[in-house]
Length: 334
Image (tube, rainbow, N blue to C red):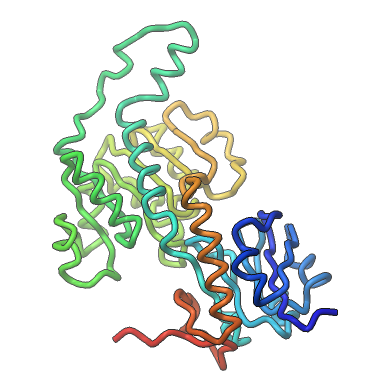
């Protein structure tokens, strides 16, 4: 049995092209290809670090069963599939990779916004069925002067704001966690109250993490606070929108169209959304480009090496719950 640390890639990835050159000099690398945390407990209870994608949940039920586990790197931006509090109480540091796909998700959001406002899907469908009806674009708004509301102005939201600005859109951000004056750095406007923000959003683009605060942040009530005829784009997390309420808002005409890269339950099982004529769907793919996928995985590998070699990790996300952390944290920002 090897005396070297064991690093387990828990799910989704089964080949070592990006991670192995970085991790192999420091640890043994295993690809579990697991779909449930119990599989990891059965075979990899001796792991010292996990690289986690999105096919698996790590909960308070399993985390205590990994006595040597020092850290978890969520290979991506979101980390809602890892119980941060349970990990923290065990001293397990949880990190994410927040900066690998900023441009790619913003580009995907821009693409989806243009596609639904310019009626791309309905015109393409009609032509493929033998039609040639230019009137299908009637009602499409001019982008210049249209108000884009960016919900969440972190890395990706800020990139989306700049893309909307480049189209000549009026851009308004809402993000209570950004410091005063942040909007000035972007050259956009800001709403400090959510109820003030929503009525301005002719297009709303979501760029928030999934938290208790943001789960169903667009719901039956808040959707009606958007102006009649608004467009909705979500490349953040599916449960940020109440999908049933969205269907109702679409059917009533209050929402003109929606573009969703993420849905409440993935793979999609909501047949109303799947077949709705004014919904554009992609399969949680906004994060991807050839370059971003490699960057995400290599940055995960480097974070694992920092953890194992007792150097400060860069992106801890569960600091508030950590008790006797099993690795080195970066200094707290003042």
